[in-house]
Length: 107
Image (tube, rainbow, N blue to C red; front, side):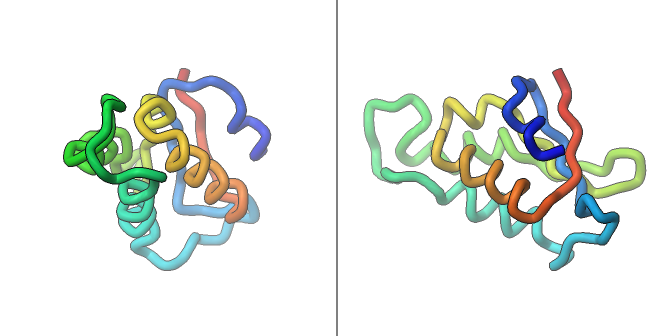
């Protein structure tokens, strides 16, 4: 299942459940992950990159949202995060793989 993460997508919907059907803990993992990912990156100072500097966190949060989908709390990842912060994007995909989280790809 996790090798599907290399497929192109417009959105990635990550569920709070592992591949073996267990609920992923702690219950606030999505909020913690968003906080971690939005602070992730080699340079958090101002630079010429269009998604760097003071606006980095605000813009990256727009690419990561918690939503209730079919009654389940999910993390919705916009593929534009890859351009905004490649390091954070890689970290997020590794987190999904390492924790064997269920996900759906939206084209």
